[in-house]
Structure formats: C-alpha cells, structure tokens
Length: 391
Image (tube, rainbow, N blue to C red; front, top):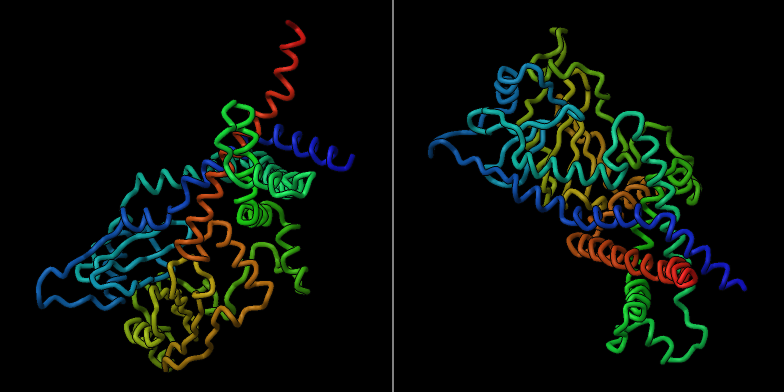
C-alpha cells in the first residue's frame, strides 16, 4: 500500500510539473559550459602597439576611460594573470568595460550576442524569462517545480528498488535492455536506467536549486550547522572583512584625487597595491574594490576558474603602507558561509571544475530523457485507456 501511494504521488508530481522540469532541464544542458564558451568567444588579446610601449599606470588608465565614458563609474578593477589581456572595469549591475592596458581605449566585452543568448537562457531557467510583476509569479512556479523535482528524484530512488532482490530484477533496472523493442518497454527501461545512474548528482543539482528558490531553504543551510542566517540582502558567504564599504565616492578614485586633508599621508598607487597583492602565488585574477576614502583596500583573489569557491580569498591592505591588514582565505569563513557558497557552484558543477560541469550537464540531459519517458508512460497509463473505452 505504501509503495502504491508513493507511486501515485510520484506520477501526479511528474505529470503536473513535467513541462516546467523539462524546460529547466533543457536550459541546464544549454548552460553547461557557459563560462568557457563566453571566455573563448569573448577573449581579447591586446598586443602592445610597439616593442617599447609600456602599460599605462592604472590611475591614468582610469582617467582616460572616464573621459571616454563619463557616464560609467567603475567600482572595481580586475587584472588577469595573462599577458596582453585587457583591464576589466566593473560597475556592478551597470555593466563592465574592457580597457586597453597600453592605450586606455575602452570597449564593451566581446561576444555580445552570445552573452545575450546565455542571459536569455538563464532567464528561462529561473523565471521563464519574464519581466516586471509577472517575474514573481514565474519564480513561484519554478520554485515549486524544483521542490516537486526533488521529490521525484527521491521517490524515484525508492520506486527503482525492485520488489524481489535478485540480480535479474536489478539488472532490468540498471542496464539497457536490447530486447525492449516496444515503445512502452523501451520507455520503462530508459526511465529506470537513466534515473538510477543520475540520481545522486541530480539530487544535488535540484536540492541546491531549492536553496535558491526559497528563503527558508537558504536559512536552513545556516541553521543546520548551528549558525544564524545572515540578514536579507547581504551576500551569502562573504569572505569577511570590508574595504570601508562602497559608500566612498568612486569618482575620486577614478580621477586619482587624494583626500583634501593636506596632512593625510599619501596613498600607494594602484600599481603598487596590485604588486603587493600579486605576491600571492597561483592567482588567476586580482580584483580591487575602488574607494578613495577607505583606510584599507580590498582585493578579491581568485586562484581558480571563477567558479571554485575554495580557491577564492580576500586580502586587505593598508592603503598607505601596503602592509597586510587581514588575509581571509576561503577556509576562514564559517561553516555556514562555506556551505552556502559551495551550494551556489555545486548547482552548476563549477565547484568541481570541468568534470563537475560535465556531470551537471549530463544529468540535466538525462533528466530531459526521464521527463520525456515519464510523460510517455503516464500517457499510456492515464489517457490511452480512455480512448480504448470509447471504442
């Protein structure tokens, strides 16, 4: 009786949310290698204009960029540990510009159409690409579908277990059956085989999506390890330490202005600060938060691919002396913060590198096949008999 109840709950959830789950699975497949594809398509290599050409000092580079785009106020400067790559100027939600390190010429990031495509796919994955007031409704639907999807995965594991614990019964659910020629037999076999082989990684992908969907699930991550959830609006898993906030006037930093107090000691140049931050080995990107009024300056150091939280750290330097004020590696965060940040990148698999992304993409693909075969089986069980009775 219990198994039968679970089966019908599984069937009802699958039928009622199948199309939404199918949409999220398809978009998950399309987004598998988003980071690598955009990096490859939008890669810029700015060779020096001449053999004796020198890179512009960062203060001068910011001033030149400000003259070209007076409407753009950078909040961060990011350097990549690659020769001849542009300097990335970030302005939060206002966008990003690339600055030529030798001429100061600013351009928009490349592969604009590709970026727009992935942004649209992400929008569909999260809220049907809706906008305005309808976005909240769309988020509610995708959130409920994520919960239903998690229920489907967990109950699917239980239903997968054969009634008789013999190898022949397990074999029918673990391996593809070449004798399953009819549509019903093939769909039944595929649904079970794809389901069991992808169950564990798919459960991780879907469970992490539930955390994004509901505040209570996000808070549960912290409470499960005995911590108080952070206040709403704060970044989950911040690496600790501040750069004096972003309340300082970024324009002052752009113009290279020093504090008006003549007795204040001179701050180190951005070049000198970056040189001190670069002493940390194996960095891939260094990101400086601009704030001319801050006593200390904040560097975000990424030693990975951008999606590996365990390789992202925070360094605070004294703006005048360049001395290390604080060093906050990922391991210095609380267990709750670490867990929450890991959840963010486990959802896409990026936390485990290219292998993790591939696994996440593959289980998204298998979920497409499971939805398709599951709906086909439900159609034969629920709809086809109705037509048979009429005839």
